[in-house]
Length: 316
Ligand code: COA
Image (cartoon, rainbow, N blue to C red; front, side, top):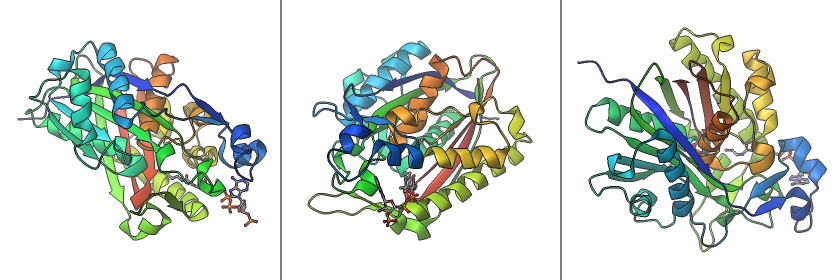
């Protein structure tokens, strides 16, 4: 029996209202708007208030995605939250989301940590579970509160990250829209390039220049593999939704694919790097901005601590 076709039925996102600009950061650490913007493309990021926990942001994004999909919470039988910043070490953030959105207790709930590649990892995992025929509708959420693990005295990292959440509802394809493919990878030899060690106040440690180089190589590998596997040329991709870490990394991928930058959806100027939330947040904005139309093929590509990386192809 062949697997049922699975599609993204709806998307949603949530970003905290509080904006932290580069100019405000420059009052805390020795940096400037000019340095941050030219090196990263970031102008500002959102910072969650105390009540805006990862699960709260995830639940808000999930509700919007459910409404967009026309699927009710009690039809969801699988919830995966991709996050490196869960509310608690246990229980899983997905269990908190289940309760907050009023989903049935007959849904499987777990978190997945593949850092900034987490959403693509969760998408592929949920797809496989739905493809088995044993689950019907899934919520796949990327949600992060990185403001809680940033060292606000470290100018080399604190300028990069922000908070937010994005979600998609997966379910049986209704028309020709469907998930076409996904590939996941990890280079575990590079764990020390980007990590958060346990401690009294765990914070992000990063070798930025090395991460930059490996990220470009890995994302190039991932897009080449997935396009070859599906016999697609880059020019057949209507919109690329890359992980929103650094504009220069995105420009390098655009050059590699020989695609104009306007084929990429980029919103990192307003959000910074929201880790596992970055792709679903961008995906939702791209859809609502009319950048993705019925029949389009979209390429998602990410990298993150691990170093994990991966890509997915989505037909709308
Ligand atoms: N403001 C001003 N100066 C800063 C700064 C800041 N916020 N952060 C670092 N600097 C300084 C450094 O101290 C260094 O000074 P020095 O030359 O006197 O030693 C100089 O700027 C250059 O630092 P470097 O780290 O080599 O800069 P870079 O061009 O590599 O840019 C990053 C730094 C972090 C922006 C860039 O390497 C990057 O984006 N890497 C990828 C990180 C990433 O995407 N992480 C998330 C993965 S999911």
